[in-house]
Length: 434
Image (cartoon, rainbow, N blue to C red; front, side):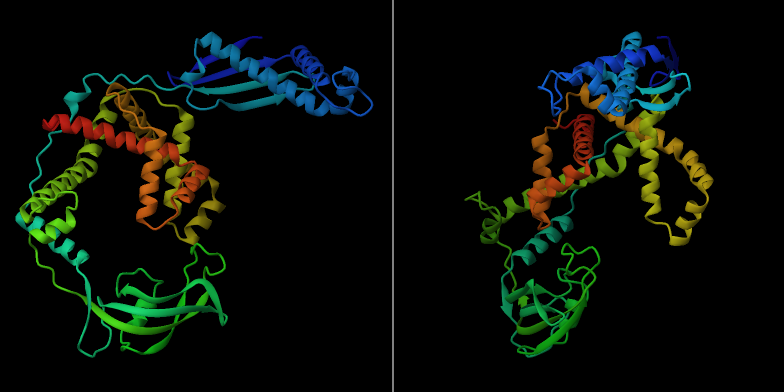
C-alpha cells in the first residue's frame, strides 16, 4: 500500500492512498472468521457457525467493517511513517475523500491534524507592566454601608401608606393557571424586596400601590425559557395578600457589628473589618485589572510574537462558534439571507478565519504556559466551581454539573480556570507579589 503524504505545515497533513480490492477481500475474510467464532445463529453451536453462512447473512455489514478496517490500517501506517503517536493528534482525522471504483478499489484522502509545538521563548520578558491598585476610604465606606444594609434587620413601617419601590413586603400568594393552583406557586408571609427582580417580570410592579391587609389578583406571563414546561410562556394569576410593609433598620457601624461579620475572630473590631474589606477590594480590583486589561494585552502580544501552525480542524470549529454567536444577534431577515445564499456564509467564514486562527493560537499558548509554569486544574476543582456557582444562583448543584457534562462544557471550564491560574501567577510575579 503506497502512501502519499503531503505536509501542509507542522500541524496539518493530507494523506492520499488507494485501498486495493485484494486488501478489502482479506479484511472481509478476517472479520467474517472472527464473527463466526462469536455469533449466535439458530441451528449452529456458538463458535461453530460456518464462515460461509456468516458471510451470506451479514455480507453488507461485514464488508463495511472491512473497508473501515482498511481505512484504519492506512491511518496507522501513516502515523508510523510520520513517527507520530496518538498523543500528538489534535482530534480525530477527517476522511475528505472515499471514492469507491467499479473495479473494487477505493481512492481515499485523509486529513490529519497535529498539536502544534509551541516554543515560548523568553515569554516572561513580554509580560506587561503591572500597576498597583489603590483602595480609597470611599471604597471601604461604600462596602461597609452595603454590608450594613444587607445585614440590617427588617422593621415594620409605622406610617400607613402604600407600597413603594425598594420597600420590603410580607405577602401571602398562590398562583393559578386556568383557575387551577400549580405546584410551587404558593407561600405565606414571604419576604420580598420590591424592585429586586426576584419574582416574574411584572409581579413586583403590581405590588406597588397596595396597602397593608389589601388583597389583589396579579396577572403575569412566565418567560418562554422558564424551567417548568407546563408554565413556560403561560399567563397566570397570583392571588396576593399584603401582610406588612417593612424597611431596613439602621445599623450602628461599631465593633459589635464587626463581630457579626467576622464570626471566626473573637477579637474582631471595626478597624479589623475595614482592613479586611480593604484587602478584599484590592484583590477584586487587581483580578479585574488582570482579566480585562493585562491578560488580553499579554495574549495578543504572544499571538503576534510566536509563529506556529495550528490545526485547521480546530480553526473551523472556532469559526463555527464565532458564527453561532453572531447568528444569535441577527434578525430573521438577516438569517434568511444567509440561508438563501450559502456563498455569503462561506464569504463570512473566510473573513472570520484570521480571528479564529488567533483565538486557537491563544488557546495553545495558554496550554504551553500552563505546562511551563506547572499549573494544573483537577476535575474535582472544576466540580467545586460549578457546585458553588449553582448554589449561589439557587440551582441544584448536581443537576448543574450533569447539564454541563451533557453539553460538553467541562473541558472549556477547565481551560478557563487554567488560564486564570497561569495568568495570575505570571502577573503576580511581575508585580513582585509572592
